Image 1 (cartoon, one colour):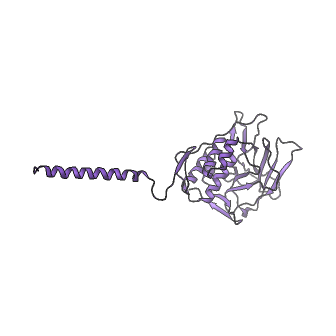
Image 2 (cartoon, rainbow, N blue to C red; image 1 turned 60 degrees about the horizontal axis):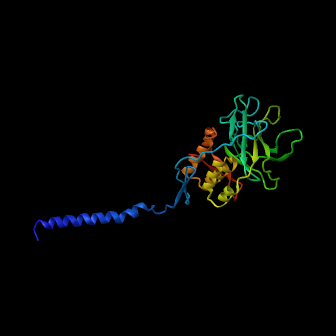
Image 3 (cartoon, rainbow, N blue to C red; image 1 turned 90 degrees about the horizontal axis):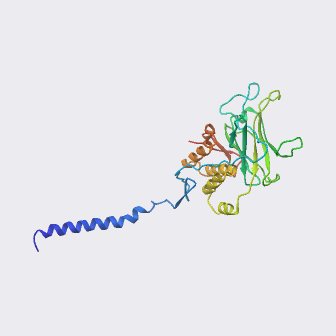
Length: 291
């Protein structure tokens, strides 16, 4: 063999070995790292089976058009006035979509699919203030003969934040395609010489098509949230996301999605406020801070 062939042979062996190494490593690099899991993208969210959520793109809430008939009106901000509740910014706020018409009329209206939904409110006052707070649900349209469905005194929290008010299962179920008006009122004047601060709106229960219902029954909570948001079902979208945050209080992606959802209905100032939820085993409030 020629003496020059030895370096050539050595070079070919090195090249072949490097090529084999790259080929053998390729499938390893393509696999997810240890501890990760399969993910799907739905509605802009990258969904994972473990507790950490990766956000690909924020989910869009598709607000449905108002139903035919008289506009529901409503009030999404409390509007505390001198002589009544003290002015604190942000004011009492209902976490619900609203529209503003050309004539400056505000309509506070959203949909639910459940018989006993939950409402969320940001309250700037605490239990030390001793203010009287009440939630009322009644049939809509309003009239002198409007039937009251539910009335409940609400305890103010230890600190300002977002609280949840749920319609108990002991009350009559909301009927499909029927609208109801709700009120959340804070009376700061013990003598009741000054008007209370309040928010109000209209809720309507609707039915989803069977295919969507089946999908919701067989999918994980984060994907359910995305489905509800895309279908314009505000109350279940908000409740599902709030419960996810309760279970995963340190999940930055869920915090970001919460800010995105509230920002989509122009409540950016509320999106960073603490979320106060009752723990399943205790009446104490669990505080979730939005980073």
